[in-house]
Image (cartoon, rainbow, N blue to C red; front, side, top):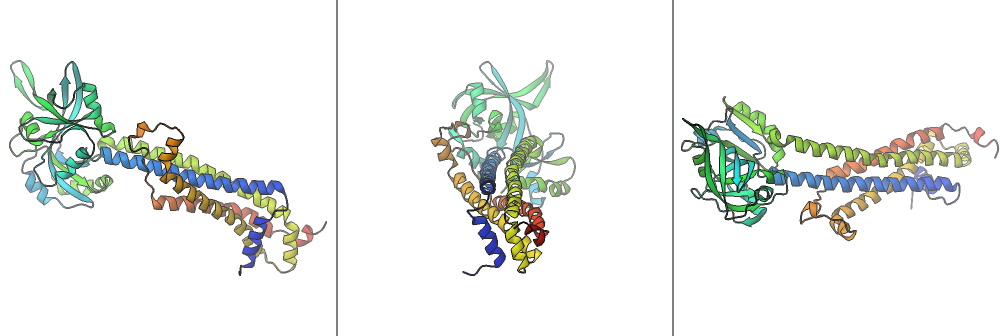
Length: 412
């Protein structure tokens, strides 16, 4: 089969079994380093993507992704007209009315601060609110009807209060209090636990969901008055760029807030952890690339007589550089391909592998470690490995091209 002369020489020197054994050892170490580095980056990146996606689905599916409310916490009237006037933003899935308030839940001898969300199951697009609750239902039934004063609790909150579906709690709301001769009388009501959901996230600790009309009655809100409008998006991250156009479309005293005000620190921490882990694992590939510099320099010294003879036969300096670069790239391409295959294979079967090794994955839930492979991220990892390998070949190639045949053959 026809091969370019420079490629033939590069592969020939790379496959040579004679010569310095230490040079071949360094080449093997470089190859293994690239394989392990690329595989580790793919595996860890996929698992971190999975955890970030789980956080996004478990937390941002039940908390307000974006909401429009009164800046002083007052109710919003004529919300149907307001919703019809607002422009549609990118990724918008639904716009629903909500009633919300901070509060305290009291059980037998226990108190817990909570965020109470009132939803309207009978309104259009309410399925976007009910679907995450149904998906993570642990006990009871999601059956919220006006006038029943039923609530749905997060699993951690239910455990802290030691309650189960069918038991009653006292809900004390932060809003809706009235002043009496004895002082401020807070709005409160006995509510019945209807269901418990387990999101396995921070939201479990303070999540309370009930019918919006019941919460509005507790807060003593006027009829047809709500706390604000709540947006849902195909991807919760699309809520962030939607804040500016919606804020420009509403007039004071209405304000637009996204999930970032409450949970931005959590996702920033996850993103920072991803970047730091990727940086540390990238050092494996960088070290392997520097090993390629060492191995190529040794090859150049080992084959200096051969190169000198080829130069006397007409091999140009540019083609000498090309031979060395191609020899280094052969190691990089082979290592990247093997690392890609190994990384994808382990990513697909990471949970069975961890279980076989006896690793306890109970902290990750019944599904095990979440894995999300992003093709663009995998492509970037492989391309960065190849780029580092290419950069590592430049200095040895330049040194080889500067070799003088007379000096190289002086003692031959």
